Image (cartoon, rainbow, N blue to C red; front, top):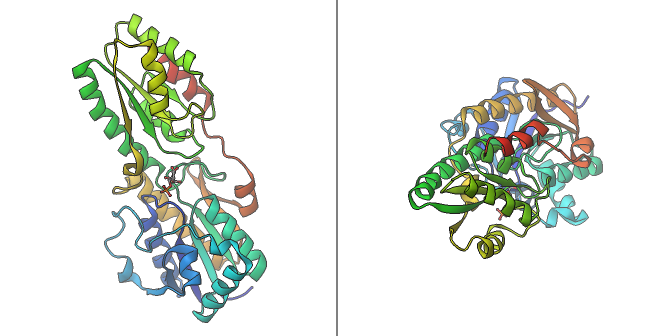
Length: 327
Ligand code: F6P
């Protein structure tokens, strides 16, 4: 087993609340085990551009509560090339880095999977994305915080919708996953939730809204996952308006608001546990694993399994109750 003297830690892809808490955990767990840490700035781009910073215990002070990532992040197309990865490898070797911890989504995991296969460097992936769309962990870093941010917005919209008897369409992130939409739709008491995993035709939505009107509801909120097949909140609102011309309809796209903010206690603890586990796995000689939470246990799966498996995390009871509780 190769002795790991220095770990490189990086964040890649979309930033997510909890990434800083995770960086802190990786750094302090490594130092506790007499292992040095290099922070790699801007993910794979930083590996190619030779952007490394020495991390000590003070480097990660007062960041556990910060959203975003102090190591910055980027989406790096050059790393998809053999030449790009060669440059990256030469730079990390020159920096004395023996192993990598990558915090990000499936794009990040795909990168370290290829890199470790080409250069036999030990790697561990940590699921960090607000979308909660990764296999191998019940929750990804940032999902809980993003949901809390969304329901804060829904509650505010509810106030004005109820005051004006309006119909609001609220679009949330999630890429191809409806996790944010379903969880916040239930937590926000939405009348309808549209998500890519469960197609809803606009006619079915209209039928549902007719039920709300018949039920004497004077204000209504519809949550729409950005990946829903009906083409987004504005398009859906336009169609619904043709049927409900008496209804004052409004559209709110929450956008990148969902990516920022101080991480929740759940995300801070999850980040701390995943960072701790990732370093201990590397020092125990493990490689090409993705750590995650299963129930309340920290587990790890082969990185290929995490990349090649689609995570379906919409519990059937949640889909069913989202309809019933909106009556
Ligand atoms: O993956 C996180 C995410 O926020 C998705 O929910 C969203 O579709 C995408 O990233 C937005 O990407 P960008 O920040 O590059 O616009």
